[in-house]
Length: 297
Ligand SMILES: Nc1nc2c(ncn2[C@@H]2O[C@H](COP(=O)(O)OP(=O)(O)OP(=O)(O)O)[C@@H](O)[C@H]2O)c(=O)[nH]1
Ligand SMILES: [Mg+2]
Image 1 (spheres, helix red, strand yellow):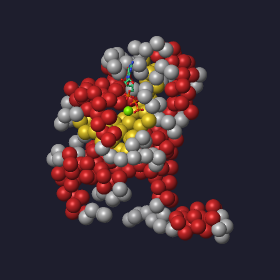
Image 2 (tube, helix red, strand yellow):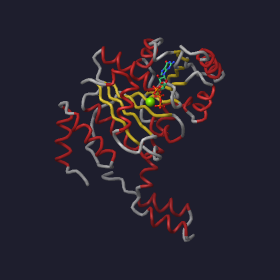
Image 3 (cartoon, protein in one colour):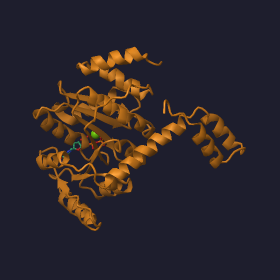
Image 4 (cartoon, protein in one colour):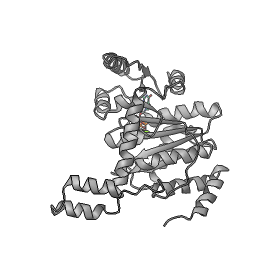
């Protein structure tokens, strides 16, 4: 059910003065497609992605610890494709992030996506804006980098950290998913395990083959806390206008465009007509482009 505008405004006011319940309700409203008034805030966002189990949440726990101690307020949006329901995954994420993922300066939201990971992406930008408006100065988006749809989410972050593991399979998976290209910062985690150094060397070698690619590979251990300071320094000084910006913008445009098309009021009719052969795909696209609704614009 749609929330009234005054109710949304009340939630915004309460969330801004620190009420977490109101903030959660606002995020839920955004996720269910409610239109929230635009904000003027400029969110600080970091996407953290990488193959399953490489230590993303553990490493985020370390980043949160450092940022908390320097006075930042950290919000984490953990996109969880394995969980179809809210709640269950939250506890697991908190545990993985360690004791730092709690307290008044941390806000953790698990977003269960089930199979429809790409369906989440249109809302991520808006969620980040609201979080920033409510005083969260560091916003982290964690996705399991397993496929194209996760890229559409992570592209809403202004800087992207790719975490790899010591296994060759992890690196191949990250490359296949196109994560290498879109990432600004690359780290190999689990440096306490054999194989991590070789993995970092291998990635550095493949980057060195691309002219103009100056990214270096950080070797870190989230468990032992090694390499975290250097990694944070690079995250903080990341050039937001690097080569990956155009890829991010392209992804943002594509996901917003996709959601406009899939929410088109005549989509079902057009699909039926495509099925019975009375129109072609080009006809459908032309029709949708002409009749798209762009709100007030
Ligand atoms: N040896 C070692 N193990 C680590 C390190 N970081 C994380 N782990 C372990 O790796 C496992 C997975 O860690 P998570 O932080 O849950 O990894 P993740 O990438 O967030 O996992 P998903 O969200 O399920 O994709 C856990 O058992 C961690 O304890 C590390 O630096 N060294
Ligand atoms: Mg995780």
